[in-house]
Image (cartoon, rainbow, N blue to C red):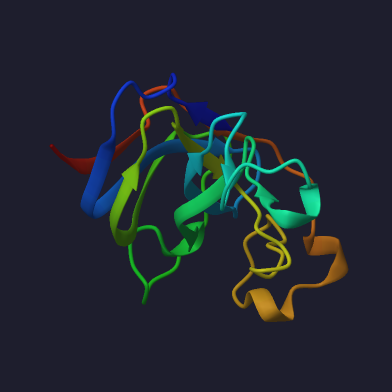
Length: 161
């Protein structure tokens, strides 16, 4: 899922912790959750300076710069020492603290938040079926599931003026 602000009318600086409070469900018993905060550059930005020769500059038109991201294996949503499966189709809270931030989204940019359930190959594939040890999952444990993110999910952060 992708959530995106309108074009910012002034600079906006985020500072400190970012907390994603997801309300989710899955048709399976296991799922990973990834939240990314993205700085979306305007459609006409170039750097280091405008020039006619494309080779002389890096075009950043509509560039998506990841500002922060984090992943949680859903089995550890309540405790890192006592993993637990999801109950299929049950709305479940998953809170995910992202790394702290100090970033200014410039006027003309957009803030985008992406929520996804896979980040492969950066994070190993989740079978989406709860098994005691994911590294011992068998081929038949890997199943396609449907995940939902509910509209009452939120992301909290501090804005400096």
